[in-house]
Each structure stands twice: as C-alpha cells, then as structure tokens.
Length: 486
Image (cartoon, rainbow, N blue to C red; front, side, top):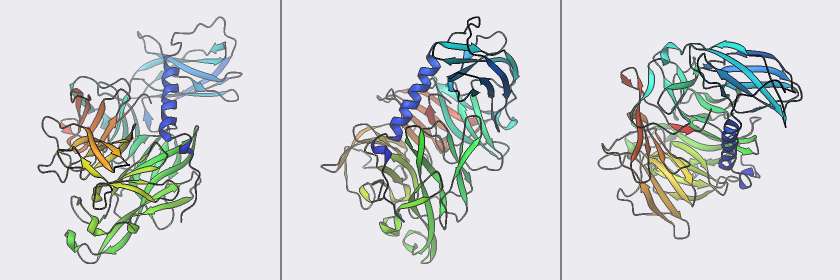
C-alpha cells in the first residue's frame, strides 16, 4: 500500500541534521578542553561506575549521579600521558551516562567525570579502569598506509575476521583499529554506517539481495547496545544493501530501505531459463513502530529486457538496488546496479521523477570519455544538483572502476561529467565499493574487492592510500566511510 506522508526532509533534510549533529560534536570536543579544577565545584558528581561495552571496545561506559547538572563529560588518562576529554553528553534528572572512546586496548586508565550547568560545575573522584585486549581475530587487521594519512576522524568499514564472524570497525587516520562491535552469530559483510542520530546500523543475515531468506538491520550505539531492529514485515524479504534514517530534529521518523519478493520470469535472454524464480525489489518506508509503506515496485517499471549489468554468478536478481540517498528537495535517489540506472522518486508516492542511465534514461550523458557508468554502487547527492557515483565499470572496455561526478540539468535533461578519477593502475572492482565527497572537497574511495582505500584531491592527487589487510591477506569490504567522530 501507499500512504501520504508529510516529509520532514522538506524542512530539515537528513543531511542537514547530520551536519548539525557533527558541528555540535566538534564544538563540544573542542570547547574548553583543559583539565578542570575542583575547589570551586558546585555540583556533586557521585556514584561513578565504569563498565565495558556490549561486544564493543575499546571503550568504557561511565554512569554516575550529578544532580542539577545538564551535561557532563569524562576525562581520562593513561599513566604518563596527558588527560583527554570526551564531548559533553546530556544529563537528565541527575542520571548521567558517558561513553568513553579513544582508549587503547590492554591499558590502565584513570577516569573522572566533569558535570556542568551553566557556570556551575563539579567533578567526581577518579576511578581506575583497565581496557580489555582486542579480540584475537582483530589483532592482525589494519589499514597498511602506503601514502599519507587519512583526515582526523575515523574510517568505518566491516570485516569477516579470521574467526569467521562479523565485526563493525573504526580505523584512525593511521589505519589502526580504534573501535569495534562484534556480531558473533553473523559473518556476512554488507551495509554498516553511522546514521544522523549518531547510532549505527548494520545488516544481520545471509541475504545478498536475492535469496528467499530472512534478515534485518540492527541499530546500535557506540557502546554496542542494540536499540532497535528494522525489518520489512509480511511476505517481503529485507534487502541488505542500505538503510537510511529520515530525521525531524533529533528524532527518527522513518527509515527507507529495500525489500524484495520473487517472480517467475523468462530469463532466457540473459543465460537463464524461461521459468526462473527471480528476485524483484521494492522501496519501503518503515516507521519506528514497524508500519511499512510500499512506495515503489520495480515490476511496475522494468522487465528482464531492461537488465544491463549481469551479476557474477547467476541471473536471479532482476534489478539489484544498492544505495539510497535523500535529494536536496527531500525526495529520494536510488542506484539500481543490474539496470545500470539511477532514479529519483517522489518520497510520498514513490513515483519516478527521472531516470539517469539504463534503457529508460531521461538524460543524455555528455563529456564522459567512458560514455556513462555501469554496475555502479553508492550514488550520493552533492550540492548544485550534482551526483557522485562509484562506477564499478562492469561494462567498460577494458573494465575499470572510478568515482565519477555528473552535473544534472533537469531542464535540458543532460548529465555532464564534472569530475572523475582513474587510478594509476586502473583498479577494477566487480562489485561493492563507495565514493564519498568529504567537506573539504576531497573524495574518499573504497575499492571494495581490491581492499584499497584512497583519499583523492579534486586535481587527482592521491593524498592518502592504504590497503585493508588481515595478516598477510587483503581483507575486502563493502564500503569505506569517513566520520568525524564515534
């Protein structure tokens, strides 16, 4: 069914909320970062307790009482090191909780809490805390840097480690693991990202987007606590490629993701049979309470004759959506790998507003020496009606992968290449991957199956590059995403 929806993104887009949250994080982290003094304390901070995360680390979860305080942060120091502070966290009704990240594994710390309310402040007694060692399966995983360092902040990706289980990971600018969340009952690497509310989501299941199997997205905190699960109800399966939250202020009002069901289709033109059971996808909107609106069904627009980018092993997925983004006007942008297409949809009705690429393209591509994209992943909206793609290049001859940016003119219906980058060795990744434009204009490229992460300047200079390794072996990933903090 389809339901009319008043879209908060038309007033406050998810991107704007994320930017606001990041600004607040950075401001909090940078403000008054000096060791506070205690003699003039006017707020009593008591009952400090420290515990580890839930399958997560290295970190400490500090709980405490701070009556009359409205915010608090933790100060922490290892022996012989200067004290550092977390950002401020809100305190409600005297109960405080601060998640302390930036800790090293297997290290002793002293931690105390500084609480504030306007000009009033107070500190707790110091408490000792020892972090656990990294799980054995993570000790050999890192990004081996061959050029430079990444920007201050963190690179998020995931790994099926040597113990054959799933880990969400954060690496620092030098390629060292600084945070993880273990999912011991799962092993498949797919969508892991930070959402605009500061939580994370990761797909848990065995689907690759076509199998008739159940799966869901877990929403969890930096401390590792799972706060919510997102799953399409009824007869549809939950696709693993992407979930995006729509926010109103700091509240999640909806999640957008893909579902799929199966149809008997004639795939003889694509190496299959006349009676193949083929997965066909839909765009869904879920409420936090679990209500689902089916916004768009690919069967209403395409057939197997629109299939342009065959999967690697079979023909049992007609369309294969793999990314979703919010446009500047609040509507949604979707990448369809097997159709070689990007579509824009009305967020209320699901109606297709335009299609870029594929058999039903509304645009003429101009100025692109490779004549367009194919097998693409990770379409992201940029300012000025531009769009950035991770072009896997399954249809290029010879095959080559690149990030590519197009300027869209929806009056003349042209897509003019504004920028692309081809690595010196013409790296090619058959599937997965990402291209993220950073706030300073550089682009972070995640070469998935090549296990390479590169930071590229607008002029094509490689500012930083590293290979994600597990011991002596390359460790592939779905995407590599930069965030300013955990």
